[in-house]
Image (cartoon, rainbow, N blue to C red; front, side, top):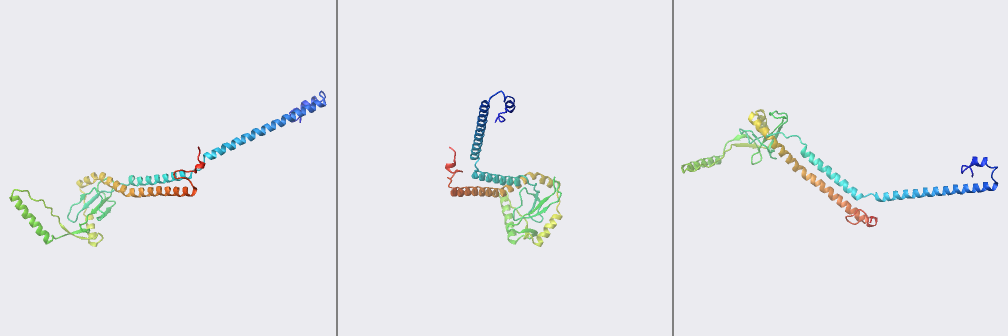
Length: 281
């Protein structure tokens, strides 16, 4: 026991100087001190372990998983991705090609800042150099009122000839009375056919072969590019908006429905993420 107290050398050197009873007293004192130190050390260690476990228990209670909040954040993240993709499809688009439109044979080409109507026939000239920054041109062959594409000039119908003659007589009478003549627009008549008809395709090929871009027409094409870009972005926005709104609405409704169903099974009140017994004061 003296070795435990570190008095081995002292006990050996002074064994002759002290009595037997003194050695017993010294051994008992050293044993009591050692046992007291061991008991105190174990109690301190046990107390520290209890405090550590209590701290982790508190942390675990504070870090309880909130599945509802996690689901809401995942839903919001998906909505943000959908909105970002929709915005990218509208903003980051290649510049559209300018548009040249024609109302029929013998009619001049004119610059159209708007896109071609859906019932028009469009021919894309991807590599055509019209004098702009980038090559490419769209030719828009406008349809007749009945939806067919004009391909050749037709003779004026007899009833239309009679109407034009009556208009001329009316204007002569107006001018004789000192009145201004009535404005009349006489447009040529055309034969029309569906866009994939052989006669229409032959007319389109001839129009492309005879196409010549004059400096004045090239200037009008360049001036129309800003309007063409804006109309193209506007069209893309109108096409993307229903998809973005529909997908975001579906995600919101799905998240709400799942939360409502799971709360019903778990007995959690509406609008809360935990049972009342698990909420902190």
